[in-house]
Image 1 (cartoon, rainbow, N blue to C red):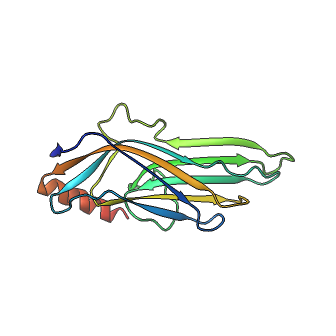
Image 2 (cartoon, one colour):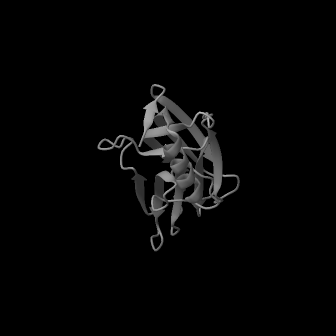
Length: 169
């Protein structure tokens, strides 16, 4: 893959709040890439953090978040090739008279992919941060911080990256 780094590390932060209770909502993150110059964004690390779900006795609750290179209509997970990061906070209380047990999962497991050059590459000019809750009493948010750099791709690499990204939607 022919990529030439054109910037230092860029840090991007964003957040999204549910538009309605327990409803999938996404926020576009504009990368302002130069598509005529075959510019891409190489993602080095992602830290994603959905708000904790509500603790409701006898009810399982959850709040999830995902960062995707394409717009989604439903929550994505790392089994989707366009999802760069996913996190979930859940409280399992079904069958308990108290507020249950909290469970968290995050992927990648840490904010950096220490054994890789990058977590992923965004070839289009935007990414999307989504969040959705289950059985919460009020709308929740999800925050993300992304570390990466801008790079110029040769024509064939750029075409392959864009096609792969668009087809993964």
